[in-house]
Length: 449
Image 1: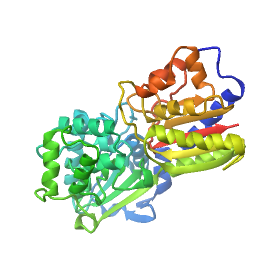
Image 2 (image 1 turned 90 degrees about the vertical axis):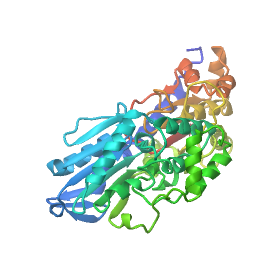
Image 3 (image 1 turned 120 degrees about the vertical axis):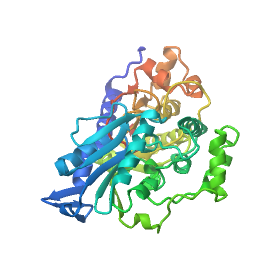
Image 4 (image 1 turned 45 degrees about the vertical axis):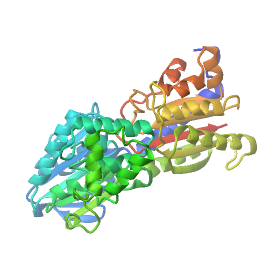
């Protein structure tokens, strides 16, 4: 570390930013979220105000996918115990816990792998096993799209892997990526609900997408799909990926647009007659809890939005413009101020470095707040991971750019190489939480003393 070590006010601001972040996480702890939403009184299970008589079901199956699958499954086991006939949920590697009735399958994220495909196949088999007198409870959380891969007919797992990699690097939004995921899958886009029918299906969802669009979270395996094959072709044209994606994928999507392949299930389809989908936690709840914590720390707090999208560097510039306004004029809130936002930005990858959207946000912010006293930026993923790294995100403050130059590293060079992880690692400014077993998008906190 250079002579510009963070001390005094900046160190205090960092501790406050961390405390605000973790207060947001606590509000969306998956097990607690399920327990708030589901209550059992003897043989009556109430889910979101709807009552289910457990004695009326021959079997109860638990299925699902997502980073929060382990604690959500744990909550259900505590509620239902031996009433669970069988269960299987795909989770990210390392996101596990000890369970008795539900089997957890560890799989790859954000790029799907064979473990995920094998687990998805078994989940689909379990779904088809359910009969009209059975209850199926599906647990869906962030990361479910990658963790539930089941390629459509004629497509391989590698076709899907290459497609997702290309979409991510192109800067496509999660809505756009999941639109294509739904139309190249046997399990997403309402297809899991089709497999469960005619059993009763209840899905508990921990949302990690902007706007909490149910058909986008984990690519909506139990929800009517609002997108089409034609939408997929539009996304391919938008990012000029026609010659970059696997030929079989483009051919398959084209066949769907030409009505040679059946569309995904839509609203009004009979298969959704006995299906209920409930959001048990989302980003706005984390933001509200973070706001309350900031206010308790005596900050004048302003929630910018829970739906921030767009290119990461541009989002960082906008956030920092607000912070500079606060520092100069006291608008939209006077100092000491806390600016909070949520959502999910995208990185257009042009370099060969290592990082994620939160670390890139912090690196872009570093130059925007350079030299302005007492500003701290914390951007972190609520799942504890940011891109293919062990960090949730990173800190940037008024001295980051100066400290970097003092040890011979150029913030702009690292930004152009998308190498935010190595930049902040050298400065000791990575934000590392470890797996949080939840996921409700990203949380950004800017403090201005």
